[in-house]
Image (tube, rainbow, N blue to C red; front, side, top):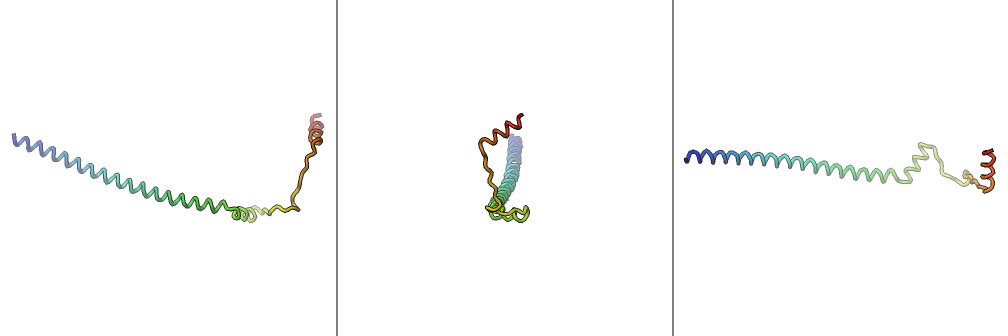
Length: 101
């Protein structure tokens, strides 16, 4: 009877040892996965900060105006280049009435 008990206890001991090894493997695997996720989160934070800096730089009025002048050949609006249009209330209805006939 003591031989059977020894075999049973040995089997339980081996089962516990294998369970412990499996638990340690899973813990290491999860730790490595956690480290990767934290590194990715740090990289995403760095990218986000860089994008915010880029957005603030690219959206500045001076930069937009400089690109408009340089690349598009635009010039500032002056009073000499401004045209004002006036609308006479009777002329629009008369023009549309003539076009309908």
